[in-house]
Image 1 (cartoon, rainbow, N blue to C red):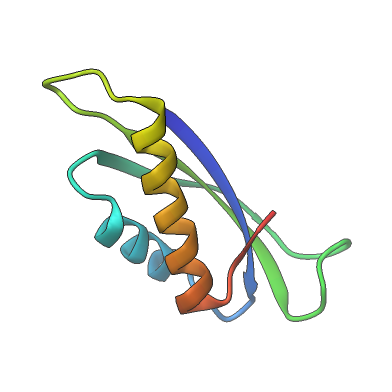
Image 2: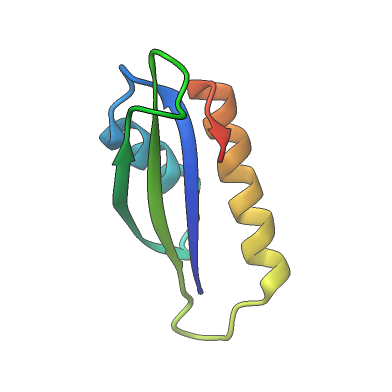
Amino acid sequence: MVRDISLAVSEDIQAGEVIKVIHSLGDDLLTQVIPFDLYQGEGMPPGTKSLAFSLTFQDHNRTLQEEEVKKLQSEILNRLREKFGARQR
């Protein structure tokens, strides 16, 4: 399963820092995190930027259930909010 997330964060936060936190919470089910967008400018509050990531969840032994991926994604978003003050866009 692939899920995209878009976050508004302070402009001093690096995508690599966010990726490390995502991987640390991804359990064995998160197999890939790919940054695919960075936006700063019109529509963003001063001092912030938007980062977007594609998350791939996979288990080689079974089919993942929607609810378990939703729960893991929610945990990731909560942790990013706590650590970086990120808000989902």
